[in-house]
Structures are given as C-alpha cells and as structure tokens.
Image (cartoon, rainbow, N blue to C red; front, side):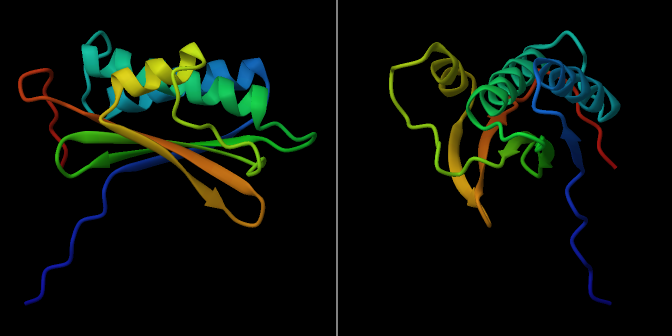
Length: 142
C-alpha cells in the first residue's frame, strides 16, 4: 500500500489593508498557533506575532492598493518550524535586505530566513521562517 504525505497544517486569511487589518493578522496568528498547540506566552509564539505584525504593517503601508486587501498565510513546517507569508498587490515595491528600517531588521533577527517572491499577476509574497528549537514549547500535531 502506498502512503501519501500528510499535508502540512495551514491557515490563510484575507484581511483589509488597514491598520485594523494588520492588528487582526497578529491576533489571528496567535490564535491559530494556540489552536495548533503553541503556548500563547512562549518565545516562538511571541516571535511569530512580531514577525506577522511587521509583515502585515508593511503590506498595509507599502503594498496597499485601493480596494485590495492582503493575505496572511501560516504553514507548520515538518521540522517543527513555521512559515509566515504575507501577500499584497504591489509587486513593484519589494523589500530589500539591508540595515535600513527597523522592522525588517527585527524580522531578520527573529527568523532563520526570509525573502520575497512574485505573486502573479502583479503582487508579491513576503515570507519568513521561524525555527522552533527543541524544548522551547510542546507541539503535538496529529
């Protein structure tokens, strides 16, 4: 009998490109991580909340187009990590890796890697991965 891989647990939500939408992205991320078994007041959950807050704020500030929102995506990685994705409609305004801007310095400090990829036809997805070190919290995903 052939075994199929179990898809990674995922969460996706479309949000308004407003300050309220950015705040809601952070709150929803924490709620989803708690639903997946991450303790609310743990280092990994706090790091994820900060990264989501920064990427969502950037989507609202730099990626906003009138009448269009942004999308938050969370994916639990098989090696006990988390991939955060924020997609907005402004593909021409991609962030760059530099020491300029406090927000992306925070993202760089809290993640194992981050980057940008096009989201056709005109948007972009900024992604970041957080590695959860053994003993930092308990994850029981079935």
